[in-house]
Length: 384
Figure 1 (cartoon, helix red, strand yellow):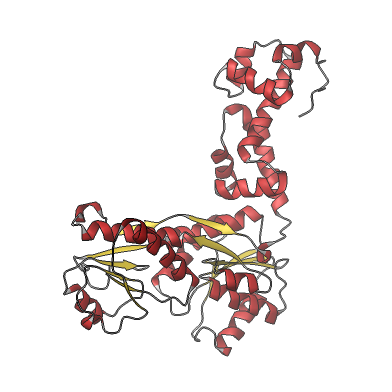
Figure 2 (cartoon, one colour; figure 1 turned 90 degrees about the horizontal axis):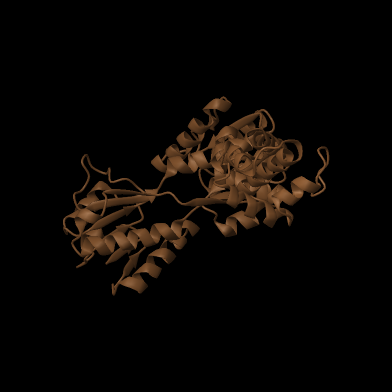
């Protein structure tokens, strides 16, 4: 089979790692690698093609003429109306990446403005990341998008980007389409005299570790699971080559991603306000059988990012904080009321009285009845 891929970007190297891992474990392919699409019309005999570089229509026509499975990675099967019948598309969910970036910024606290710096030639993946980011921030008066007619990396682009950043209300949260674009944002911040992260926080995509670690300051990045994308591609190609066409969707999205935090978003003091809002909501609603997802929904951030903030600042998860708040309410009722333990368990959101008894003893080292007997109405000798 033929793999057409450009190894210059870390994301594609990670993709290749996942692809070759799966191939070595599950197949006996003879894999030929090319780093450009030139010569697809003279590629010789092959049983399958994976294209990680966008081909021209003519090049894809030549490849499709072989009537073998073709997987388009990082792009939609939209090179011709109706697509090619042998082609399958696999890419990251770029809209979700933009949404995830917005949720991450919201988990840091409040900003005076948000901005998106996409690719100047506006490829589909960059546009979708921007749309996801802007739509997720609609309740925060949206996010401005930087636009430039200058080529990326040119003096004109750098000067325009610096002026755009200088004019933004501070503190500002800036999301770039990829790590290379985020590096340009960091350089523009220095040029415009905007301090990172105190006046602007900057976030990229792909977690290119060499770029991110050497940036000044080191760059926080959204890390899509490129290795899983590679493994998914190899698995799909294996099924197609075996004739199981009906088992492979024509379009597949990779949704796994995480935040790799570095100094470009640290430290951000407003995170304490977010945690205070979370704690207030938990204290007020813990007895209503809420979960961590309810807290995240109330704050307008994702659960994973809220858990990240809790672990960083409080050394516990949101679920643990909810359990602690429920147990605090149990202790209050044991001290101040004569409610039965069964009734307290039900009203404080526990599945059963036995579950509450066991949890209470595990947390405080004493049985509930003994605590009720020894605790005075206005004391809390057991602590939290």
